[in-house]
Image 1 (cartoon, rainbow, N blue to C red):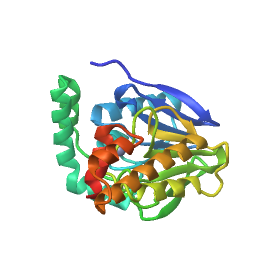
Image 2: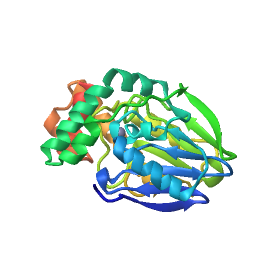
Image 3: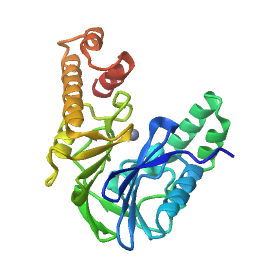
Length: 272
Ligand SMILES: [Zn+2]
């Protein structure tokens, strides 16, 4: 049995982030009076149960869950938190229904290929739980007396990215729209639309120069980091546009890209 993974950091008043070495994942916990909000549930039933137990060590309050997007590492642990409200973008549910079991097979195989049969078995044995509070462009909820804003700014890292803003703490959970410590992941992305999604995040009413942004992977960052990453993602969008129009060849685009070769080629493939 693997030991308990991760540690909490408090990024603002009663807003915690749990950092994991597995995939460098960050999940969130917003505490309040008589309720709490869990942001993302990790990648399989066992990881979700471990996270739920660690939340229980922090608070006995009933929880609400919000999923930042449908990718397995953010959503497959949800079953451990039921029965509770589970918020997500409507396309998150659609994607989990249509592609969840394929993603489960793919990632189980990936972990097995890495020689990590324990994680592969955990994923393969996970029943995928679905969100039941669906958001199209935006919604507000109250968790433990604290107002939380959910916003979708169109496709970006995925087709169903949901940003979670806690205005009283000046914290934004960005999901994988923002990535710290590794290049952004374009596997399921809309490269041309991603910059506009980040503009939406940066323009959230109530955010300030001191806003803390929690990426889906890596340590929390400041607004300046997001502005810089937005510029890189916009540069990649421009390269994608120029390759698609025939103005630039792929190898030239790879040389001009702010990101590594594989990342850039993945982005180009998503637009061609
Ligand atoms: Zn993702």
